[in-house]
Length: 93
Image (tube, rainbow, N blue to C red; front, top):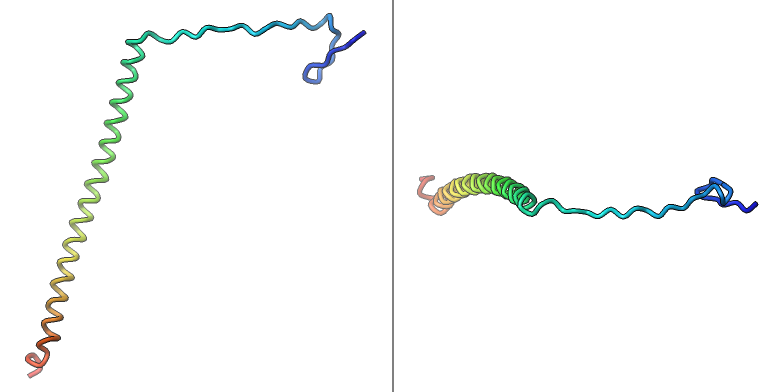
C-alpha cells in the first residue's frame, strides 16, 4: 500500500482528502463610515502633533530667553572687567 507523509504524519492515500482553500471575498466598509473614522483619527493625530510642537517651541523659547539673559550678564561683566583693566592705573591711585 502506498503511503503519504504530511508534516511527518504518515497515512494511506485513501485516508487523505485534499480540499482547496476557500476564497473569501473581502468587502471594505462603507465609504462614508471609513472616511469619517479616518478623518477623526487624522484630526486627533494632528492635534497631538501640534501640541507636541507647541510644547517644544515653548521650551526652546524659554531656553533662548534664559541664554540671552545669561549672555547679556556676561557681556556686562566683561565690559566692567575690561573697563577696570584699561583704567587700572586710575583705580590704584
